[in-house]
Image 1 (spheres, helix red, strand yellow):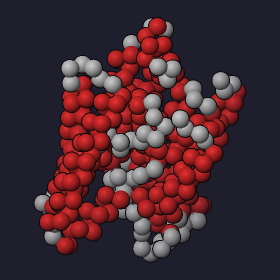
Image 2 (cartoon, one colour; image 1 turned 90 degrees about the horizontal axis):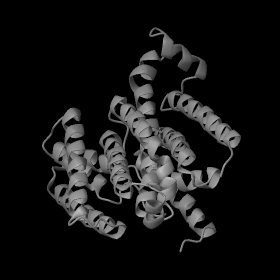
Image 3 (cartoon, rainbow, N blue to C red; image 1 turned 180 degrees about the vertical axis):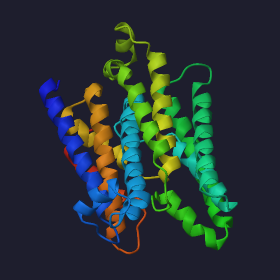
Image 4 (cartoon, rainbow, N blue to C red; image 1 turned 90 degrees about the vertical axis):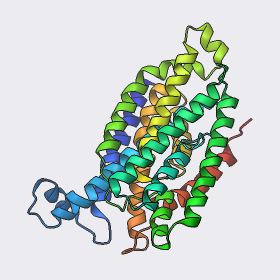
Length: 326
């Protein structure tokens, strides 16, 4: 088990990296702004570049940090819930449900509020469908939950393909960018930041029980853990974290899959340490990925999901190569 001193040092270091990543996110873009001007613009609306920093880059950077933290925590929770190291936040069809809702909103020409609302409703519907079907007669197992989620995701994928096939050509670009994950449409970070705080606070009391649950249901029951309650709570928290992130930024891949593995290598598998570490690391990763998405082919911008995939694929292949999974 990681020592208290090392835990503090790791979290303090990641907090420093998070502040540094946010500073980078505020500085870089199609027009680079010096750090001194960034700090001045944050506190003085008349400073050079203040409107760009306050109205465009600060909301986008905070949204990226919140979404990265949500996805990383959701991935860590899903891996415990399903007892599968390859589980990620999108494995149970939540992203597919949100995608169907978002594409319907774009198809009918609704605004940003309509898009966010439809995406969140689609994610909630997917959560309820998977939960209801997997629960069935009460015998809720990891395999049943996983298979139900995969089937719901497949159904949502078919609906997404249908919408892309019949959508007007002028709306296809917006649909594709949303599906790949995108922060360029003037996102509001409030929903994601509040969601990050709520999920973090609600997850903390479950961390001890999650450490026991990793050993198996029988061992957890023998040690007094309410397995049914913990599993339902973890499912709902991971699902809501995913739904909030997808509603804010679309489907950003690999954050919830790769970050929990990297943090597990740093701090071990104690969920009391792993979850806050993953939250900070996920936020840092997505902020830096979004910064790269803005500058790689500037003045054009890439969908941030493309950057996370380009980074995440080789990193995860490296992790698979050095780790033996049964």
